[in-house]
Length: 462
Ligand code: GDG
Image (cartoon, rainbow, N blue to C red; front, side, top):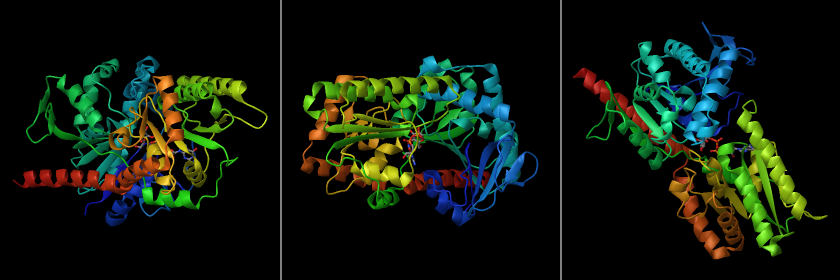
């Protein structure tokens, strides 16, 4: 078993890191003795960090090794808020009008990845397999190859792959293709993303589609496949069942939504649909409330400040119109809540609204399903634009965020659904969420990557 080296922008911190990815990789890391490498702006203090050579610190205290590449804070902002979140994020989510391209963003993005590559290369052993995560690190394999690294390198993109038309919004698109081709295995969330990626490569004469399903771009052969990410479903179900969180008053019907306050999540559309529901279904006034948890994120980016204002205005307008002395239609929280509380709230809510405009997977959809009481489950309302639609779309109620009235009617149908149908749909979804959980996801990816490593080792013996 080779050692697993994971690279992601943020490294799991604390002595008992509990994020989904950490849980998923825990096993693999414990077996081979894992190493996790992240990026750290030099202005932030990392508690317990110890110097680990040039531009790096190590953070002891977890049951795998942790190293952070230390980078100048100003370059970090241009890389993280700039290129990653003002160019790549809107590009991948099809929000072209929000792209803000500046030459120094791109320069910082490449420079930080080169600097990170130097740190990674220093800690790497010849047999390690590397798994790089997300759009912050597209050029990392190219930078590692420039350092002479020949290890198998896998990449997983957590967000949608840009379409063949949209990709041209990014300056230097062939460089991006060439970055991607330096990985051995590229994992995407859905078949739809794989099709987009194939369409993108097909546009370039330097691409060749090989018989075994792999792709050749210039002198590199690699593979692009879908590996839909899952959640730690059994654990989430238990947390939800044990949680003491209560929606009050209990006599009322409850709809829930929870996400980072991101423009990709379709929150304004959802608030409008809820307003439309109360307007058209008069009986529901006073009888149903909507709890929307929207945790703040990337607030230094203009587009995020704007959507926050829009949501405050919209929720205020609906509440102003439909509130009564003992009734608040929308409870809008612009802050996060603890995980066990969130799980308990999911379990109590009659309807879970997951209606993004674009989303790689959307774990909330899966968590809502896992959290339900199987004997009296709530209804998942899902948009076709969430990656989760590929796995759950047959059994959820489908809402189109671009059709407010249709979405309002779908929420009404969810509230009216008889117990038998709720149980049937929930059972089907729960089976998928439990079977294709986060361990299944990481094992499938790592097995495929390991096969690549053994394949190229075999070829080098010949
Ligand atoms: C990216 C992709 C892809 C949300 N509010 C609170 C809270 N959360 C938790 C949820 C869930 C996680 O955050 C959000 O995950 P999502 O998948 O829904 O969305 P992104 O953050 O955009 O994640 C996405 C994912 O990567 C994985 O590949 O699915 O498509 O965009 O776990 O429960 N957690 C707590 N309080 C909150 O208020 N504790």
